[in-house]
Length: 69
Image (tube, rainbow, N blue to C red; front, side, top):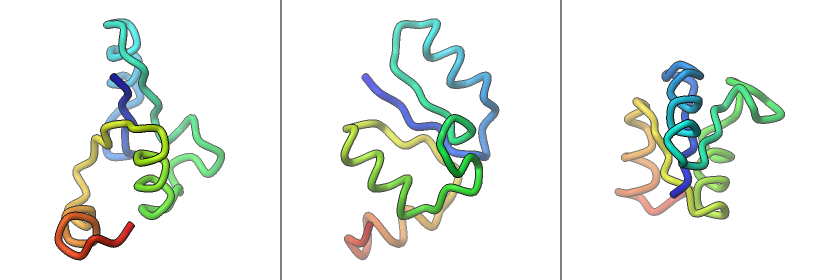
C-alpha cells in the first residue's frame, strides 16, 4: 500500500509508515516540497495509486464532488 502525505502532517508520519512496511512519500520529498499544488498531488496519487493523506477539505470539493483533479 502506498501513501502520499500532505504538508499538514509531519514528515514523521511518512517515516513511521515506511518503518511499518508501507511505501510513503511526504510532500517535503517532492521537487516543489510543501509548495506542491493540489492538482499535482491528486495526479500523483492517481498515477501512483497512492492514498492521499491530507487535512485539506478542498480535495473533497474538487475531486469527489466535481470530479476534477
